[in-house]
Picture: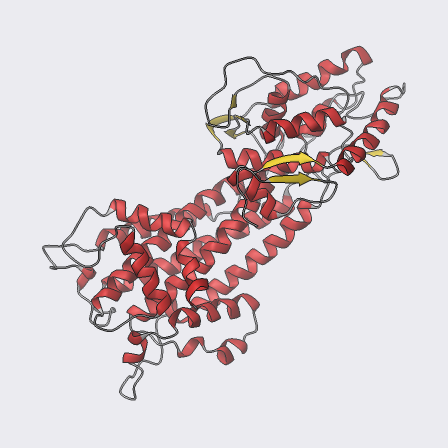
Amino acid sequence: MSWGMSATVVVGTGPVSLAEVVAVARHGAGVRLSDDALEAIATGRAVVDELAADTAPHYGISTGFGALATLSIPAEKRRDLQRSLVRSHAASTGPEVEREVVRALMLLRLSTLATGHTGVRPETASAYAALLDAGLTPVVREYGSLGCSGDLAPLAHCALALMGEGEVRDATGVLMTEPREVHTLTEKEGLALINGTDGMLGMLALALHDLAILLDTADVAAAMSVESLLGTDAVFAADLQGLRPHHGQAVSAANIRAALRGSGIMASHQTPECTRVQDAYSLRCAPQVHGAARDTVAHARAVAERELAAAIDNPVITDDGRVESNGNFHGAPVGYVLDFLAIVVADVASMSERRTDRFLDVARSNGLPPFLAHDPGVDSGLMIAQYTAAGLVSELKRLAVPASVDSIPSSAMQEDHVSMGWHAARKLRRAIDGLTRVLGIEVLTASRAMDLRAPLQPSPVTGAVRDLLRTRGIPGPGPDTYLSPDLETAADAVREGAIAAQLGARS
């Protein structure tokens, strides 16, 4: 389905899909609650109302929070309790988080509210949905979440906006200054609005979408490098790949074969005189590395889909009407896979940079001019583009250090083991941007090398990628030009999926 501003995601008692998260977060799709969700919310709220009238203390309803959970709060102060909870927890600092991240976490919190397991009132859930549907985006800042109990600070900023407080940007991104509608929170509602893994999960959903594109792009880029470096495609044969039956490896090898099909450049050296039987690992082992990345992404997707189906809050309203404390808000399952993906991103980028470097070295490029320069010595060609890729890869290796192995106790040692899942997600977003740029540099470099192999003709797929870059203004071989805009253009083509799309369109 193609999502746009006019589309609406209906949030029911079941999970939203990864595609729906991307639609709301990135493409501005609207949201509304389904009738069954409103019914479930009302049922859950009835349990809270009954317990609120009880003289016995119930956590989150008539007590304080965290290390203050043993303090009983009288009925006349419980609205103050909820308001104070949200205000005090909206304590993030640093640069603003991207709009798409805030919209993703709001949608996921709304999805949990819709299960009826949190005890909010239907009017509170509806007001939250209306905020998201109107395109209003609370300002959430970079630092503040420890990933346990969930993403408290980021979610608190969104709850604060529901209360008519805090900073909010309108649908055009302008900071709102006029007074906003005030929604008063009652028992349990403040806690229900801030207690979940929605921030880290939202960023995982967006990352999975992006990585699906980037891994296809990496396969195309590898094929372009094998082709223009006069490598052999024999190693990508299906029967050879089948001897090591990893699913991701088979998919990547098939993509590379499809991208090379019909290549005149490949055919030119597939003769009895050709002695090339083994290429460097960065060429020969591309399916193994890209495939392992694909399998890791598949694991992360399975975790994300289970998390999308979760109802995370503490305490939670059970199906039989109990209110129970639990530890489901801990971000470890999400934090781990976010860290796994950062490792994958760094390794795929590292292999891409090594292929780029081979084009520029006359000892390894099989007849190409030094640095693919027009007049070597006068021109530097793509020398510094490789420096840029190398710098990015070095940064990606640092970003691959896991966040989830760290834990800083908080809340007077009540929360004595935290996930740091939010931090894992933040660094993964930076890593994905880096991989995007590294692949763009490889594709740009391989395209120039492809032109230098003329009159030999590339495959339909790789030639289409080269032509796409040319139509976007990236020149072919010639005297040195201002290179930075070309690197940005290539990165944009990768990010938009334009490179990966050529594989499906032409193969």
